[in-house]
Length: 78
Image (cartoon, rainbow, N blue to C red; front, side, top):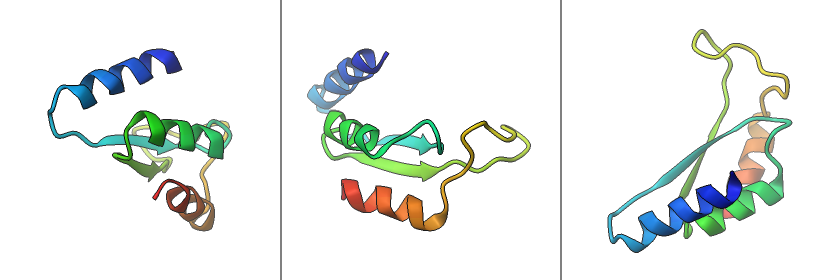
């Protein structure tokens, strides 16, 4: 699946269409290496969002990154 996402990113980036890629980070699912790989595949056009549980999607097994943890991820890819 990750390979397919990389191929999709390549197609979008090579199309000339202005694009920004977004990913919602979920604690227990995403690691620093994942974020570095996603940023590389997105050609530096990656915007991260922090998962929030709510009515649409309830609690997830991994949980929610703290604000400090999330900021560390965003600094890593800037």
